Length: 254
Image (cartoon, rainbow, N blue to C red; front, side, top):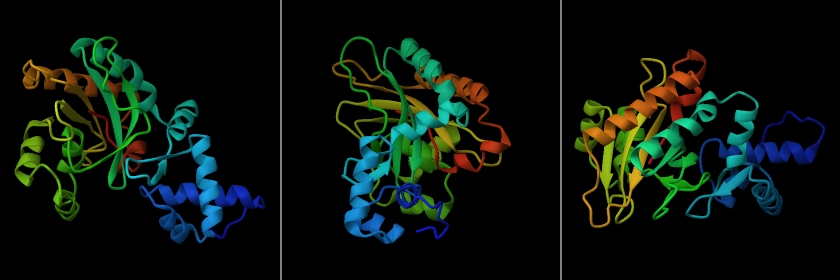
């Protein structure tokens, strides 16, 4: 835990919990190890932060940073991508008739930070704050495709796609998947790029439940997604050099 004290012990400890989650999901034991707090204290603080949506849980029950942090970042004017994401995702949803989400990578997970749900029909969107594994889905493909070789290799372990798949993603500039993460669900994702040469911070996408009809994937769908990403990049200032470092673990998606 950081040895610099503000003089308000409970706030220092809560800040230590949030800092520990910056690198990705953590179990209670992981929080104890990272912060040096006693197990009951770490648990009490994490649950209290969860109550205020500053902390959330992933599908494995691990603690992750919560959606309230993204909302506060927008309110503070520090996250122009999220501020721009709402209308862009809504336009993409209206054009495609399907839900659209924005994801950011957090450790070995990707977290939904913004979403536009379809207005009619079957609703299958991923709620804001939900963390998904990096092993499946077009969003995971896009987030891994431009990683450094060693990290890409680690990410492929246990993944439902291959290095050849990711090579195709890099060549096209977008990814697609059908029933890769969930049966009956297809998606297209594309990166919201940071400043060159850092090619992948964020990505945006569209997901559909094909049912009996053919999944509407391919170049037309991809073009819609890529155009939406271009708008998000331009309106959020994602190419601004000031965002480059922060974007190393981010994305938009599925």
